Amino acid sequence: MTRDILRRLAGPGLIFTGAAIGTSHLVQSTRAGAMFGAALMGVIVLATLLKYPAYRFGVDYAHVRGRSLLSGYRELGVWAVLLFLIAVLPLVPIVYAALGAATAGIFAAIVGPLLPMPMMASLVIALASILLLVGGYRLLDKVNGVLLAFLVIATVITTVLVLPRVEWGTLTDFAWTQETAALLFIVALAGFMPNPVDVSVALSLWKVEADRTLPEGAHPTLGEARSSFLWPYVMTTVMALCFCIMGAGVMHAQDIAPLSDAPGFAGQLVNLYREALGPSAAALAAIAALSVMLTTVIAAIDAYARTVPAAIQVLRGADQESGTRTQYAGATLVLAALAMVVLFTLMREFTTFLDFVTSATFVVAPLLALLNYLVVTRCEMPEDARPSAAMKALSLTGVAVMGALAVMYFVLV
Image (cartoon, rainbow, N blue to C red; front, side):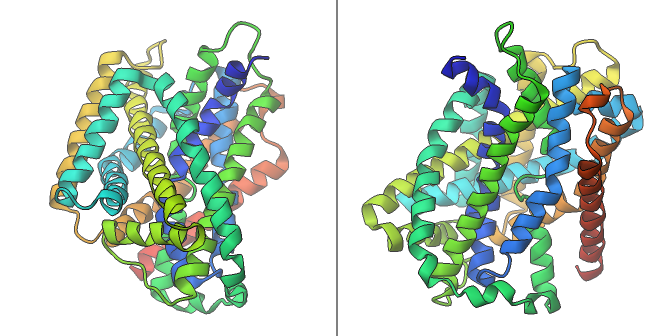
């Protein structure tokens, strides 16, 4: 099997990783380490573990049915598609805004704040939208792997170098469980860790598109499809832990509080690499971080620009699930424009805004995870493609835990 085919087989998983290693890792995981040392590493692992079934079910359904989870929702009933849209669509512009601001913050940390932050973030969103409209999925697939590689290498090296500085006693320090602010941050940390649960729909759309581009006879088995998603998913977890350790080993060890503005925090992130690797490598790592954040923005815009037209097609009962090129372009431009409105009207302190966005995506997560569970247990699928008893148990545990945390959030907020 050629390298190109292997890459296309892994494409959806790699795009998922490119979307994941963004604000959840560079910002939230680093802040977790800076504020609590190693104490929240278990939370990161638990969040990625409990969310895994929801994403895996998207891969499974797309593989055996050749359609996205939206078709599964439609099979459950029109109510499920409408519920998904009601839960997700209002959050999309603020997700774009948060990602755009984080990317602009890193750019400002590298070259300086050339423009006001809302304008720089708007330019990031506009650039990402244009790249997608010109190149589409194939450009996204090619760009993603290239930009991710150096950041992973630099982050792993930095993590190894700062390991001796970490106060490992904080790993068993559960004092944060008694603090309201810490519990609210847990919800914010878990919201994008490693991605919002609604990305499972985009993952299924990417999977359908990737399978469509494979040559005849090159389609993977279900086991291969699962593995091609599992290993990139494991990498997102490892990378999240690396950023947490970096924050703990440098910022928490020196009692450095995370700054609330995007350029300020991005500067602190670059300093993590500078302390461990030196100025030259830190400059390269900063450029890689900027590139990966741009990839995250591109992946997010592509995800929802695919999801909205596909949902409309599914609601109409059309045989062709994917929307037209015109619908894709329309969804891209409308959602990007709404994100720019958010940037100029709602954005104040970056980290406060980000915590709101990630928390909002988390409180709808148990509902979406339950929908995905119902799809693979009730909709038409081969019996050997349905989840095992262990995977069902993990999925329902995730729904229960995320549901409890969502209730806790509303009680405490």
